[in-house]
Each structure stands twice: as structure tokens, then as C-alpha cells.
Image (tube, rainbow, N blue to C red):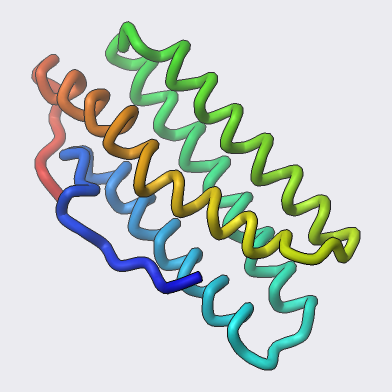
Length: 139
């Protein structure tokens, strides 16, 4: 595991979505910190719960944006969100049961979010949204 750093290439052009992505990155870095320090298991669990909870809120917010502009790729995007949420929930449950490697697994789901999900799903949506003349500017 290594810390995340924001790259301009992660920008979608949608201010709220980009703020959410930055918050997820910050929470991932908090997880990195607690898993690489002498903190107790409860701190790691709290960190993971925060990530899962905020990411679910983010996906819901993003899907509302998609509904608001009748985004044609909404169903595929929702399926991807559901897959990521399911994986994160599974890892959180494993962590709650004290299974080794669960926090690291969640960290890798977050890495996938930034490396694959944002460029493949969120950026095309941002372009579509902005192309519809919606009131958003680059963050």
C-alpha cells in the first residue's frame, strides 16, 4: 500500500463529484495511515466504515446527477457502482470478523476507483453532463 495523490487527470469537470473524489482519496490516505501505524483494530475498522459510508453517499449523489440529465449510460454506471459497493461491503464484513488482509483489500478497491472507474465511467459522464449545458465548471 502507498498513499494516494490527487492528479488533475482525475477531474470530471463536476465540482461536487470532484470534491467527493478528493474526500474519498483523503479517507483512503487515512486508512493508509492507520494501517501503517500502531493503532488498534478499532481505528482501522472506523476508518473503513467511514470510507464505505461516504462512498455510498457519493455514488447516490452521482446517480442523481445522471438521472437529472437522462444520462444514457446510467444503467451500466449503476451496475459498476453496485459492484464496487458490494466488494467494499464484503471486505468490511470480513474486517468486522477479523479476517486478515481486509483493510488492504478495501484499499485496493479504492485504488481501482481512481485508476479505472473515474476515467472509464465518471469522466465520460462529466463530459456528457457538461455537454448538456448544465451549470458546472471545472473544480
